[in-house]
Amino acid sequence: MIYKQSRRDFLQKTALITGGLFLGSHFPDLKAQSVIEGGNGKIVRLGLIGSGSRGQYLMTHINLIPGVEVVAVCDNYQPNLNKGVEMTGGKAEPFDDYSKLLDKDDIDGIIIATPLYLHSVMAVDALNAGLHVFCEKAMAKTPSECLDMYRAQQKTGKILLIGHQRMFNPKYLKAFEMINHGQLGDITQIRAYWHRNNDWRREVPEPGLEKTINWRLYWDYSEGLMTELGSHQIQVANFIKKDFPRRVSGTGSINYWHDGREVFDNVNLVYEYPDGSSLIYDSMINNAHYGLEEQIMGPKGTMELEIGRMYSENPPPAPGILQLLNNIEHKIFDPLPLGGKSWIPETEVKNIGEYIYEVDLEDDGTALEMEGFAQMIREDHHSDILLREAYYASIAAVLGNEAIKKGEVIEFPEEYIL
Amino acid sequence: MKDLVIKGKWLKRELIILAAVFLLAVIINIIGIVQHDTKWIEMISQLHVVIILTVILYVLLWIIRSVIYVLVLPFKRKKEETK
Image 1 (cartoon, chains in turn cyan, brown):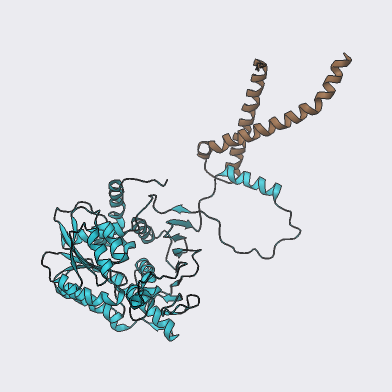
Image 2: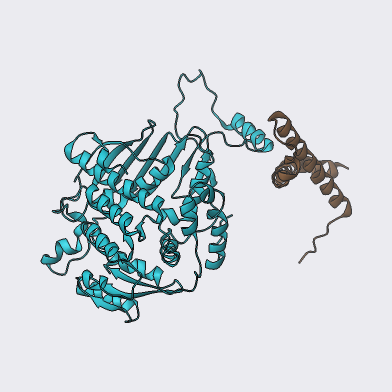
């Protein structure tokens, strides 16, 4: 049964599931971050760098967390800075230069929600300034920047958490647990896609601000669909495979939005894992019919994680009376074949499956992720597992673009294997 | 307005028909379980299907009986007139 519930009930039930068998025994680092409420009483004071649309979205969640305050906001675009400060009730100190924000001595950590090309430099500076860092995904724009961030975390010991919120989504955590317990068998193939039907543009008040506001559309600032959308799903695939892809090949182009953008508006890639399994990935922004999904396939079944359903390859039979009535119905109404079919089309199996996690989730994991970051700060606990997940997923996303641009199969570079 | 009078005899007959139809639905459930080698717990767990089937069969039977009644009615009247 799907049911709605209070946030407190939700957190308690989630704690029972996500803090239980799977995360406790196999991924101990995740257990601590899965669900937190209240904390140890310490007020966590955060600075937000980048108060654009994503930063504002994160703030809506942070504002609901007890014991967490945004005390400083930084943005170089005045309307966004004003909005960010306004969302704190005017309490936050405004900055237009992030290095000045880092000099503040009364903040515990920062949230980076800036364009991709700024992630690395800002995160490294913040870590070196002795601050904990939550940085939006993807980790960085190039593999070497990802490595810089990883090394900075290792050197400083501060928390570096990348915004892959599915790792905090109870539905996904439950699915990971089920997969880990072998309910699908060995995972032989993962298909993932993210389809939208919009131009991905934001309104620009004056032409000079085009690249500042629509940074996602230009190679100097962004890696397009792969880092903005694909990295989430590659991270899920990697976590399920407990590995990262060693090769990638694919195609991509601008085949619809011929509006001056540089990044691809469609990508199609195959990532190969060392055990011979693969992640088949595609993303486009001119058709939204199929939406987004991660389809996890093994010899025993399939999971669709976004809609949260599992389909067994051998589902339990229907009750006898229904089978009998169904047979009678077919005998009466089905046309009589004149000759046997030599070939039956192997179309999709009509199996409605079952829910992975029977809770109506209103949060995609972002709220729990923000709570998790606050609690990690309180406990001064960094998760190397989560950082490595983000690291490999981000590099794989970037390598996907490289494979498309070069038209070659790209191997995961040895120098970036941790 | 004319009062609708339900005679005891009619009610008893309808209840017997309903019970017979329910028994038939239960037998169909048993056949289903045996034929498809499913669990005997379905005698209870599929009771809702049995009840739905009972209602469907009863309504079908009522329609058939009504059709027969309408077809037979002229002959019945003729017979009464000749008496």
